[in-house]
Amino acid sequence: MSKWRGRQGNDALAAAIAGTLGVSAPAGAVDLAPYRAFYELSLANAFGRSTIVGATGAMSAEWSLSCDGWVAVQRLRMVLETDEGEKLDTDLVMSSFESVDGKSYHFTSRTTHDGSEEERYQGAARRDEAGAAGSALYSEPAAATVEFPAGTMFPIQHTRALVAAAERGDRLLTVPFFDGPRPDKSPFLASALVLGAAQPAAADDEELLRHRWWPVRIAFFENDTGVAEPDFEMTAKLQDNGVVREFTFDYGEFSLVARLSRIEGLSVPDCR
Image 1 (cartoon, rainbow, N blue to C red):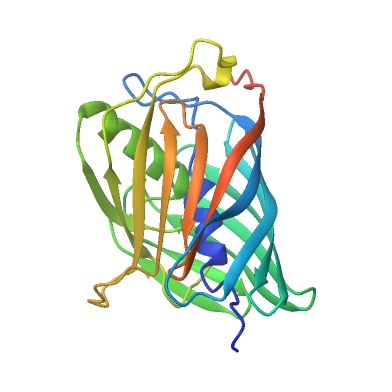
Image 2: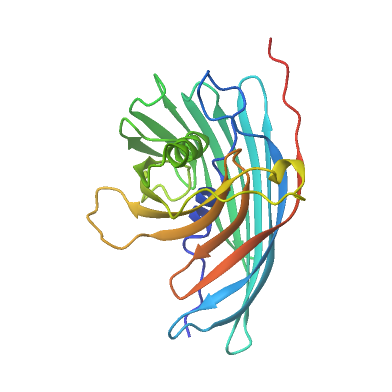
């Protein structure tokens, strides 16, 4: 039996939670909140001839705002159990910085499989103006340059745009997307579908959760390849303040669900 190695592990976490937040926004822009959140991970479904019969784990995301930009630190730890009793342990840590002017983005990610096999990505993306074409320079795993076209969105910008689309009643947002991992496939083409109308918060929700939310599904395609099948898909319950109540990661043979267990707000700096 060939082991599942989480080939989309980096993309799953980065795409799922890498793009929230952005309080210092121009008038009329989506106003989102910095926070620290913890999620419990479990097996949602196993399909067809999947060998995965169980999953446990946890995910955390911390988003803090400085006067220059957003700092994100995310961790995903999961243990998958196969039908032969084998346990596959994956640990992903990713950190990033996205400037408030949309011109620069720095990233570092590290993935460990079963305590030994590792994937490392580190680099920085820059462009002259927000929304312009640019390039990312990698220092790990090897020196490389990735060009990305005009209109490419970094993670925070992408979530802002998705919330704005949902608020307008738009159903579809498709844009080039860059978050760092997988330089061989970057930038991805992110196709986000708003699956339904806004849902109200419960009256007894805590403050950060007292917001309406939309069910959204995002598919990530290798850009300019003409491949019809996405490289990775996920769904999320996305609030209008950027908080994600729940994620479902679709790995083809099986899917994992990450349910929010605890959340706390973070402070906003005074940049006057």
